[in-house]
Image 1: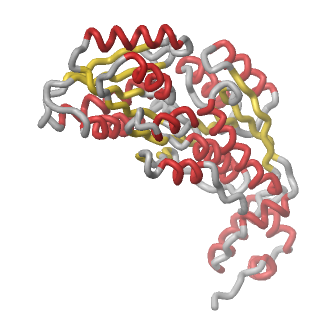
Image 2 (image 1 turned 30 degrees about the vertical axis):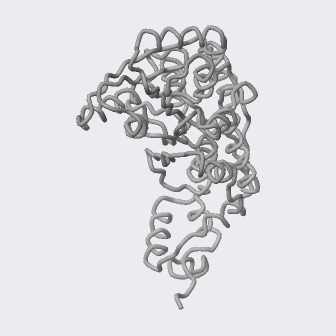
Length: 360
């Protein structure tokens, strides 16, 4: 059995006090550089392994971070993300990591900036947020870089940015997967539509990446001649307007038999389609929110791709914890699995995404 190396063992060999060794190992300062170097050299030589969790408890300090999210009461997707964040905070609260939540309007860049300024005024030790608005997200990342605040971004990656890490989907691969799933229900000569039901779709990086992946799949799998069209629709909260839009889409494209909805609002399309047409149109969309699951069970949505919003929030906080308290090296890109959900396995995935281990 391997002998446990104690602080006293290091102190004896280095010729210093146990208090000096403790300050070096826990990075508490007040140690001359040559002494610190000697202690670390001896610790390495003896094979000392620090119990980081015990050290975090013993340090008895509070570290405050900030989370910046779209209002979770206004959108079921972000409600799941917030659920994951709260579960993670519960898991690490006894190690001194606390968070203050700031919310913004999902459709307002000005609201994002206002909430971000409030968060920065609190001088947090870290910030977690989704870069929904590209220009405003870059501004916040620049602010955090200037004030040396580590950032975790979720849901949408910004390749040219340098956060502590990104946690979420690989948008390009999710587009490829959407095309593969939709391809099962299409034959040569038919048309499929990439439908972005969101605001600011022309500059939304994750939506553009999904489209690129979707188109690339059909280019690389040319056994079927499928026409691909793209449509953007912002009036998704007006059911009458959405139904009218879809009626026109079906009327203008007689061979339309597949729709790839790039957001979690897939249920809004399914809700209109079953009322306005008898045509069998396959639907592939995103996320296990209740409204989507309802139409999946009714066979009005064929496939859902789960982006794991609760897991994004949970892992976002855990990565700040590992960086700030455990001093661990953090992996820059952390892609989450793209789960394929159908009627038969939906309940399993629904339960799994709302369950996390909270003991550390």
